[in-house]
Length: 474
Image 1 (cartoon, one colour):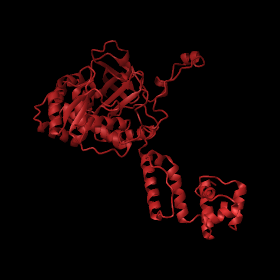
Image 2 (image 1 turned 90 degrees about the vertical axis):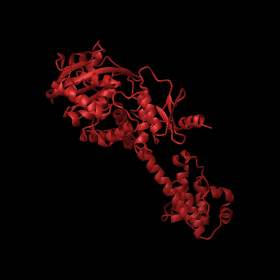
Image 3 (image 1 turned 180 degrees about the horizontal axis):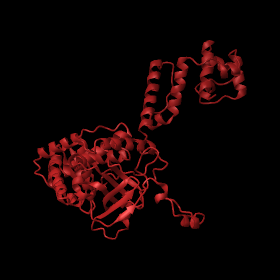
Image 4 (image 1 turned 90 degrees about the horizontal axis):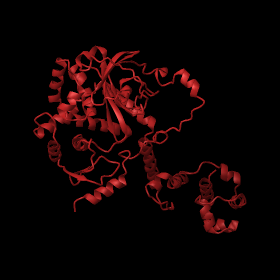
C-alpha cells in the first residue's frame, strides 16, 4: 500500500478515537511534525514505528493495512494529493498545496473533476499515428462519397470572388490583396515568421503576416488565400485531430476554388472534353497555378461536371504515398486500417516510373494493367523542401479517349496490393544478398512518437505569441 493511503488511514483511526496529533506523537515518542508528514503521505513509516502507532491507537498493523475503505473525505484528499503530484498539475504550473480541514469537500470534488476532464481532453487530442490514419481514412471516404465535390465551399468561393468583382481567369496577387481587405485584413510580409507556421493571422488587429522569404517556386497568392480561407470558413480551434484534418482539407479546397473558379473552369474543361483534349497542363497554364493545384482542382470538378471518375496520387521520391484520392475503383495498397497514405507505391506504377524519366519538361503518360483493369495516368515531378514528389492523375481505360496523351506507347503491369509485385526483391537477388546486407534504416520521425498535441499540431505557441506581441501595432 502506498504511503498516502497508509497516512490517511492512520489519520482516520486517530480522529475516530478522538486523539490529537500531539497526543499520538507523545504516545509513540515522536515529534508531531514527523507524524504529520506520515499522515500526509510524505514519509513512509518504518515497520517498528507503524507497530507503535497501531498500539497507541488500540489497533493493529493489519487493521491499518487492511481496514474498511476510507471515508469519502479521505478518499477525495488522496485523489487530489495524487493529482497534484501528477503531470497535469505540473504542466499547468499549479504548485501543490496543503489540503486543510477548512477546504470544503465540494471544492475537492470540483478540482478532481476538472483534473479528470483535462486529462480526458489531453488523451483525446494526443493523436497517435494510428488515430491519425483512422481519421484520414474516414475523411477520404467522405471525399469519395461526395466525388470530392463540396457545393457549400464552391458557394463560399463564388461569394468572395463576386464581392471583389473578379472577372474570371487567373486570380492576380492584387485580387488576393483585395480579398484580404474585404475580410478586414492588411498584408504584412516579415522575415521572422515562426518556423512552424506558413502564415499568422492577428485577428485582434486585422493583420495577416506572411514570410518575405518565399522561394522562387512559392506562389504568394496561395499563401494569402490559405490563410484567409480559415477566416472565410469561420474555423474554430480544432477539438480533435480529425477536426484538424477536416479544416485543412476545407482550407485547401476553398483556396483551389478561388484560384480556379468553378464558373469559369467548368466550361473550359467541358470544351476540352468535347475536343478530346483534356490536359492538366492546360488547366495549370490557364490559371497560372502549380501542377499539383491544377490536379487537385481537376478531381473536384471531373466527376460532377464531366462524368469522369478519377484518381490522384502524390508520391515522394522515396516511393511513399503522401496524398491520395480515388473514386474510380483503382486498387492501391492499404494498411489494416484502410489507409493508403504512408504505403509504398508500386515501382511499376506511373507515379514511380516518372522519376526515372529524363524528360521533366513534358508530361509523362502511361497505361498500366492491374488486376482490377487498365488505367491511364499522366504524371509530373515537382520539387519541394522535402525533396522531389510526383503528382499524377489517372482514369479508367474507357475514359482515356477524352485526354491528351492517350496515344502513349508506355505500358506497365502492376498488381498494386500484391506483395510480390515489386515490394519483394527478385528471388535471385534475395538469395545472393539477404545474409550479406545490413542497411542503416532512416526511421521516420513519427514512427514511435504521437503526433504533436495542441490546438494546432506542430505549432510552437510560445514562438507564435512572442511574434504577435513583437509585431502588434503600438
